[in-house]
Length: 110
Length: 119
Image 1 (cartoon, rainbow over the protein chains, first blue to last red):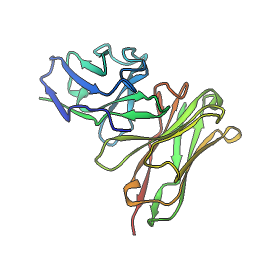
Image 2: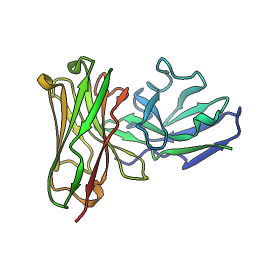
Image 3: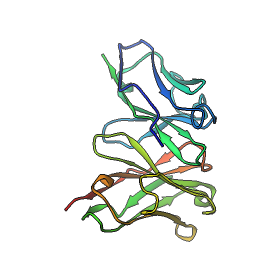
Image 4: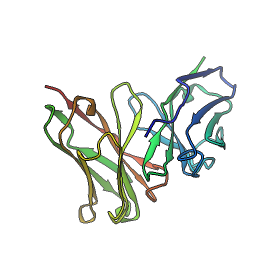
């Protein structure tokens, strides 16, 4: 159950777009559509922002979008805003009927 | 208000046991699978365990299998995590989360309860 691989940090200026990758295997990210993304601000519980690879829950900004290519899922934040500064985690269902999180990415708005 | 509230955290010595509880309110508890997710201070999220709506399917992370037991009580709308043989590296905030099915996304989170394992 190795954690999915994410970049430790990504930064961008307000208004720019950034993309966070999440790399796994064909036993998790590449094998199932159950890939989700979570945003976590300091001292707060995580919040769901993307599910089923590219679906967005109601109430989540359209600036957040998800995609996948092979064993790598991606989260794109467009029109970066100061409030987007947070930690982001991907998660996937696995062939062992377990769940696995990514290593986490700190997003900094310059 | 739809919410999950964890309790039972605290300071415990290595090798001892602790039981966490999670109370669900304002939604139909039996309609959802439930999970525990933990986060060591300053570290990333780690999935710990999940249980289906009817307790027929249960899964554990390798790091806790054989030491932790997840369970649920529909009459009390509650989720539990029995933690035995605790180790220093079990120190973390423990979050209760729900998912429509065991495989689905975690769409509601509690605020977490801190477990500190130290002598």
